[in-house]
Image (cartoon, rainbow, N blue to C red; front, top):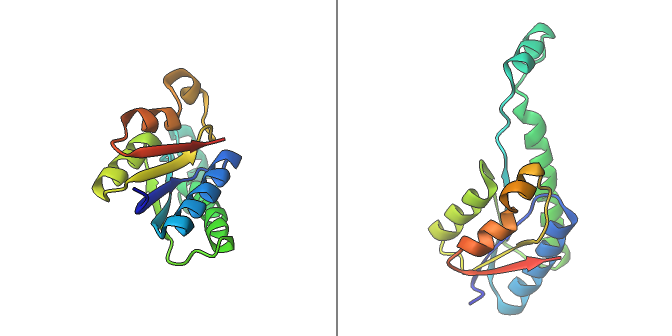
Length: 147
């Protein structure tokens, strides 16, 4: 049952608690653990693109999101290391978070998904439903949500 655990993190305090719970499960049951975050793709407006061009700024606006994503993963890896876990995998995806989690879980035969009940969601989450709610409703495996 807890052989292949996927823990989804987004930088929220609930996600870090989810990482703690996922690590405890992995340690207790000798499970494989993957820490995953799914970042939304940054799509700058034409005005932002023009500003970048006029100001002679280098790179793409996506780099800000990429740095933040790395910070999220580093914090989750720190949790795993503090629990004494070795061989923890990490996965970073871009796109719709709920869809990315579901696709990964099905493709990798994940038997347990652990994620925070509330994350860094925005107005869309309030109007259309949270990522945790979508995953819990649609997953074909066990889903553990933490507070």
